[in-house]
Length: 398
Image (cartoon, rainbow, N blue to C red; front, side, top):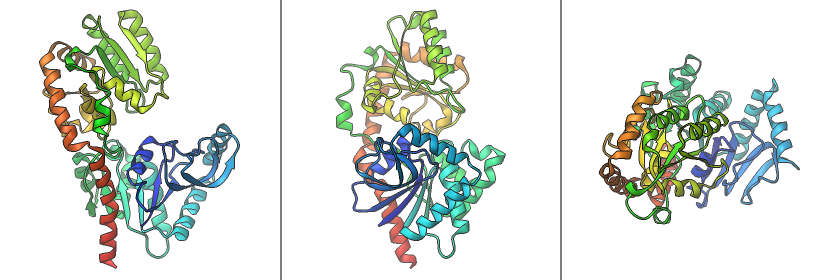
């Protein structure tokens, strides 16, 4: 089977998706939906097509077609200049069309809509002759947020009208895709990032009840969607309960780092900024030491950090904008909150800090859920089944 992925090459989400199918005897090709000068170091067993790339970041099992440059820094800078050039869009599209004609993929799969989906749509419009079966995968806010923006709505509708298959992480987004005109086949709904080796991660959990833990995890994203500063304000409002706790902030942007330092000075609460280059197992270990894990954003699909909290036993406080209601029971196995209301987030934190029975019973329920829905081997099989299903239907159609 020959698969052409159109995706962000530097994204950990792309790398984790590829890891689920990389051990198959399939011919996998990756075309960048946005040129960045390198592929993610966890990428493996595929061919990638980058106009320019730095050789130091090239994973050993990835074959890159393009011009190698001696410096990653220079490769990124040169690529950035290339993407800003007036001819770039046509250049990128022509490269993609040439690759499709040369490789003749059995399946084209665009991971994410606002870059990969739009690019695949333009290729389909320009392609003479037949276009391979096309899978569109919805990431995060691709429809839930961007579908409400006038500059994106029409393009999203065009993508969904043109593709053959649709995959996503939330039943919420299945309903939205149909409302935006998708009439093809909906593939099984499950997390794009794959599952967990549950036996391996269990060893990282602190022994004893979750109620005995004294760490609070806060996702540090503060940008067009993330609302970490709301979480910090809520924590400051209940600092009277945090004397013996450590607040660990991961993925922190510069303004969140600054706010975290000021929070620590004004409240006396120990605050740790987790380095951005921390390995994934370290983030899991911290969730495994945490009583509470807080994630706030105005839009998301199923947040990976929420799933990490569920697996590691930490009690999730999650914004209701991330289809978390498809995974947790509000008030029993987690608490759903508005993403921009520090008062409501404070109420949730206070309840989780003072109700030992709540967090301990939630951890037991979430462990059962993880065994049912987050086992790595199960989700890996489901990812592979997407492609075998499409191939079977392609063969039947022929």
